[in-house]
Image 1 (tube, rainbow, N blue to C red):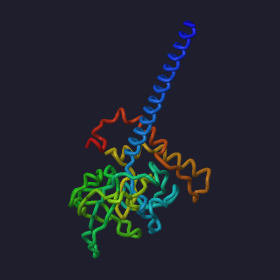
Image 2: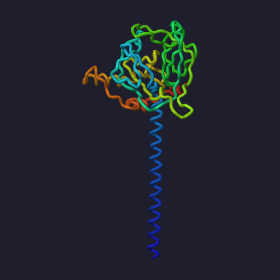
Image 3: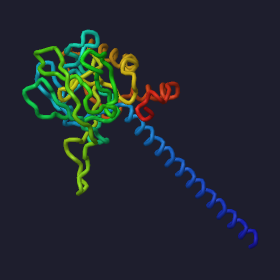
Image 4: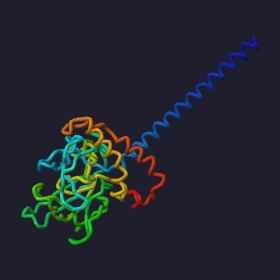
Length: 275
């Protein structure tokens, strides 16, 4: 009988050990899930975005909401050499999530030479790069939208027929109210979209902006995404040039690889959070 009792005790101990192991495994799984969530969150921060209601200027002069844009659509961007507007295809989405949201900055600007004196607005994430320059004759450069201040000059399109860009003056910047008192989100600010074009720029709500964010060097970002450009061109050889491509939800797989490769070797001061 004593031997039986000892066996029972051993079985109980084994069961307890198994339970502990299961708990440890569960904790490990939870940690892995948390790590995946953190990685996804950090990755999404690399690719500042626009809400679904933001409007892109197409190459035929019409406007299309960001949530209606497809890969293969031709939009207007800025030629980095001539400075003029040009037709450029959307080759990919660095980030596209129809249900997500992120803190949005509202940039209010005016057109001094326009007969219409009303202010205009652009919504985008604070880490997105915007083209600006110091003074009328100053060189063009990109800055994070959160760095814009009253009086800064941004580049604005007046008409798709006129390929020359105009100067807009930043009136104010403020964080947009995305959640109402009743807990509902502002419908116009739902969704995160970061289209990538062949020129590396787009015109959103008439403002010329870069396709890139979070990293301060837009030229390096453009060259880093060159493989995505190549994939688009290769794909077009096997499909109708006028056809559109399926758009996946989430962060582009190559963008994920870029994050893993570049994060350890690039100085932290070049990123938005530390500038």
